[in-house]
Length: 284
Image (tube, rainbow, N blue to C red):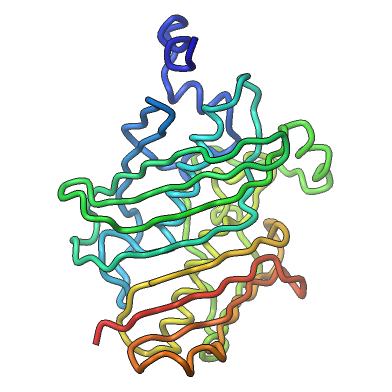
């Protein structure tokens, strides 16, 4: 019997199943109209964040990444043979963007497919498209580290702290130290709301948000994110300072004036927790 059939038999919804099987919560999890059919997870989301002066389209690349990675882990959670709650931590990701002039705030459809699912590691592929026109916006491949809830809590028991439910999710709004460099004096609980309950961690998408903005400043022109590769080394815990750095890559010399590549990193204190490589294409 399939998960969908079991859910119907027990009068439970996909939302109920996700609540039982995952460790992310609202407001970080902001997917609507969720469905699990034919081995595919689908959901809709709209931008909750201000329009960017650099990036056009219905939502920024970092927000597409956020919802896409969440859709990918939901697909994996629904593919599990049991209903145990697990953490799906992004370890690596590849992002491929598509330029689109869809209005900011337009509804975006995310469709995620589980590609591999093991005891400790898993992978999903996700496509995002404009809900109204079907125009492609993003293809994303995400590798996850899979930990049971009890294993995660045992590994990080020293990081436990009570978290407030229902607290709005806020943007990092890091201080600009220099061109391409931004800092947070400390990661606040509101930056981690819903990610994760009792163990607040800065989402990778928030680091990507700052790094895309810092790279856009270096480019100095409106642009769209053509490619991004993300490697997560560690977790950035609440209360820690954070720093976001972007520099022109040596590979930029091979690009033309409208395309540039950037080597980026995000640090928790002095410790790097994510490495990101970005390829941006200017609009003019």
